[in-house]
Image: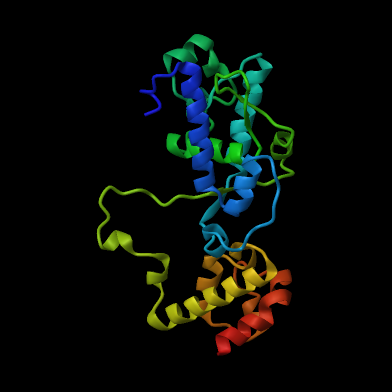
Length: 258
């Protein structure tokens, strides 16, 4: 629809930027309310009620990917050049397109360093970095990318970047493909898992934090499977650090014993 818009190229680029902002809201791993307020230049606390607060999405450490992308923007800027997401992604993927060859960008040290990630995933990285304020679109109307004040923190490794991982898309899901993570649990473990999730939702709402701040689903699944009976046993489970053990350990054992 954007490509067939009656507006000029600048108008279409602006439409694409708005679309990316909307997609970034969809892909966020944090509170949607906080994300929406940030889009309008405001700050806020996690609501504890939206879907990402109540059911945290699967996330991955995108720090290295962010560093690769930001480094590409830096290398281009060192040449006095700025380009949009499509061209930057082509460089990361090592695509020898006519434009890349014409500009000599195959000689950049970052050429091809992102071949381990698909083009679609790279575009997701761009959108989420834009949403987190770690990357920005220049005001020139051409959709070119530039660094922000917080970008150097990522490049120096003093700030980590958490990105949302989307489930692979399939055209026509079969009964087998509809299995959820909970289907890997037996009946007894599933009952405990749902009880733990209910406890987590209540705890998160009471504390005014997203559910993932309390515990991720993976941690609750392991707890439901192993059924620890002591704090020492609970402390051996991935995701249960010293702080969380002190904060939630006793409550968790009470939930398991119920």
